[in-house]
Image (cartoon, rainbow, N blue to C red; front, top):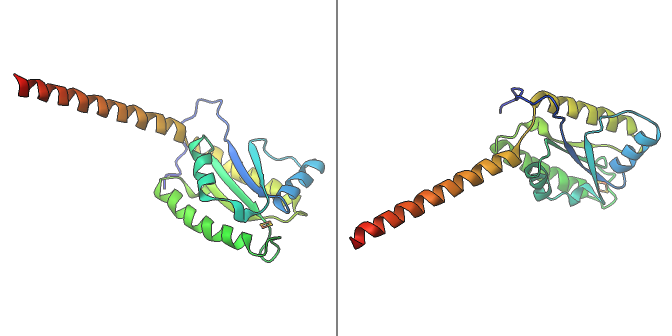
Length: 173
Ligand code: FES
């Protein structure tokens, strides 16, 4: 895994997408806001009814659409309102963590935390820690990478078509 800071243009600021359970972490984030605890403004929160609703595709979509990091927040073990949604989340998380590592995405870019409704302070700490780590890692740049791969595919298709037409001209000569 490459944790070397990547060059930035100076104006870059990390984008952190958070999937928070309505009953605990989302409420804790709300509490942190109401209590005027300061945490990095880089977070974009998506509220779900349970961390068990986090589909691995949501995480891949977030990265592919420009997120530099993804944070999942759920109820503590044995506190899930749907009995075992958070255990399902944990199993999926372990799987997606390996997939993400195979794609060359640094492990610090994906994090799961159990944060109860009363733990506003923990939301602040986790978000600030993660944003600092993302700043150190630099931009992930998946959309740019996709654009480069698309351009490469177009070049290859064009080269293949040109070569086919040349062969057909020789065959008809
Ligand atoms: S209800 Fe919060 S993790 Fe399931």
